[in-house]
Image (tube, rainbow, N blue to C red; front, side):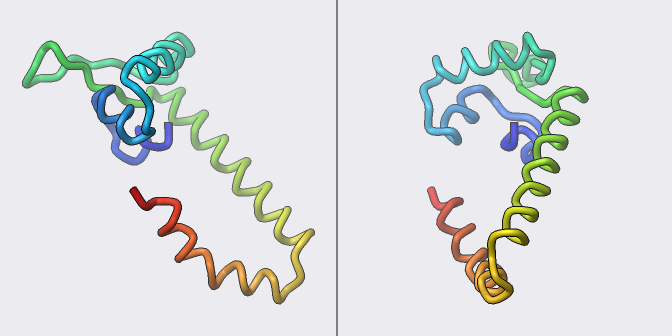
Length: 104
């Protein structure tokens, strides 16, 4: 859902490649998300055999709710379990850690 939020619309094969899973596995995930009404499927304007996947309004709302809850939890966990010095250290290392997470 995060990739769809960032890119607005993707082909299932693009999503599978981003998530490093097979197209078949991605198809199962997308079918489930479609049943839950979290995504929409729109035929490609250039190639009618292809379908673009986007978050539905409900899917975007759910994604943003999860993101907000996760961010709140993380802020609370850091505030309650880390010393001020550790919190400062986390702020310093977040950029290089983000680069590692996003490395492909």
